[in-house]
Amino acid sequence: MKKLVSVILAISLVFSLFSVSASAAVKTDCGGDCEHYPSIVVPGIGQSHVWALDENGEYLVDDDGDWISCFPAIFDVATIVKRVLFPALLTLITQHDIGLSDALSDVVLDSFAVNMCDENGKNTGNIKVEKYPYSVAECSDYEKEQIYDAIPLQDYAQQAGEDHLYFFAYNSFGNHLDAVNELYDFIQMVKEETGHDKVNIVPISMGGSIANGLLEYYPEVVNDLNRVVYIVPALNGSTIVGDLYNKDLTFLDKDFLYNGFLETLMDEDEARMIEVIARILPDKVLLKVLGSVVDCLVEEVAANITSLWALCPKEYYTEAANELLADKPVIKAQTDKYYKAQVNSNKNIQRLVDNGVEVFNIVDYDVPLYCIGDSWNEDNADGVIQLASTSMGAHSAIVGETLPDGYVQQNTSPNCSDQTHNHISVDRVVDASTGLLPDHTFYFDGQNHEKTARNDAIIKLATNLLATNEIKDVYSTEDFPQFNAARDPRDLKSLVSQAKTVDKSKLSAADAAELEAAIAEGEEIINKTAGVYGEIDASEERIRACLVKAGVMTAEEEEEPSQFFTNASLWLYDKYGTAGFSQMPLLTVKLIVDAVFSIFK
Image (cartoon, rainbow, N blue to C red; front, side, top):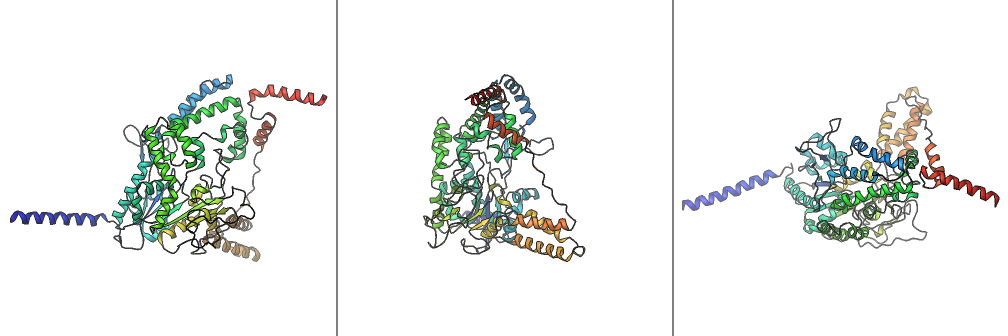
């Protein structure tokens, strides 16, 4: 009998201990009993910090004592120069590729070594991902700064509590399947820590590809989700990455290399200067060197990174995978698995909707893709990802054009609540009715992908969607219309603050009135969430003019940009095409002979 009593007491003790430990695991003040579901940010490429380590597991530091980031690679300029200098000189002297391609390829391999993956798609570099396996409330000040710098959701944290905000960090150049598995586990951990039975997730950019995998590999996660708020998600990758894997790159076309490629990536005169300098090599040699570097980067580095494969659009995947992964069966099995998730993306999102999960999408448009890949001008985009990918299939005209005259919306989505809705943008660029969620997708005209977090209207919209139930669709409030504009009010806020310090008693009545009006206009624009493209710039200009009149600011004299290299590059291209300097003497003779013959014809 005593043994039986002892057993019962022991079992009771175990259960009581389990109960205590389970309740202790809940870290929120609300214990899971509040109106706010915890939100998990799944960031974009490069938004998670990945640091390089030495052989002892200590952080590598640069000359300033700062940790060395692994994104996108580690470039030691001094070492690179030493390794490339001699073959570069030989190549210049002989005007033939004397080891330069090999030297640059070796440099690429060494620079990207920290991000290299093996035949299983696992990272082999000595790295450490800076992870936050706890809520923002438990983060250090440094960690909070990193998180809020990636996505400034301070207002959400203020409303819901920092103990309801989480940041899922991962290696952008790591194993995609591992990231998906970790996200699923992360969701379960957040539920346990907060006491809530569901969470919100916020997949941003590359995070959209991780969300694709999550919904495909863990269909049961539908029961864990309250809301999904996508922000510029790469649901069907980026054509830039597709072109990279297929080696369809604009700069491998010598005409484009010398007349258009660099101008989209940097200041025009700097770009033209590089075009002129590049002519120290014959065009064939230059293209051979570039081609060799691309081969090395794609075949030796990118081919093994499954997270990067998840950014390859489904239309590009089969050709690229057959070419690059024929002898990499383990990696191909993983990328094939994701390809299926990518193909099923809309179907899996629809399943969320059908099961009561509220899904919203925030996208940018009308910014041309960086002209790196040959497909750069085949679709509308936000500079990095084509609109058809981020918007779940919206139809659009390419950047700079509008939908044809007489075009009517196609209404192909099953999720438009009213077929009389007008889902064509005011500028007649986008037909949102072909996207999966026309009633739940918000569009921002002219907004660059990389500057999305600077658009305070987007952040306020995301905050509202995560912290309240006020917005049910794009028609819920005029404050957040379906079609909105790009904006970054940081400079305007600074100018308004400066304008408010001006002593108006020293101004004429007219100038004081204009200053007051300019301040009022600026504050009105700052407080708006529904904007007009370009209105912030106009308001800034108006306030600056007032400050100049008040004598607290000098007029900015715009320097005329130097046209020397631009003119030189254009002249060289006109006269010599893509030829290098060593090719020009013979071409000059040919030009002279042609001119003489034309005179005597």
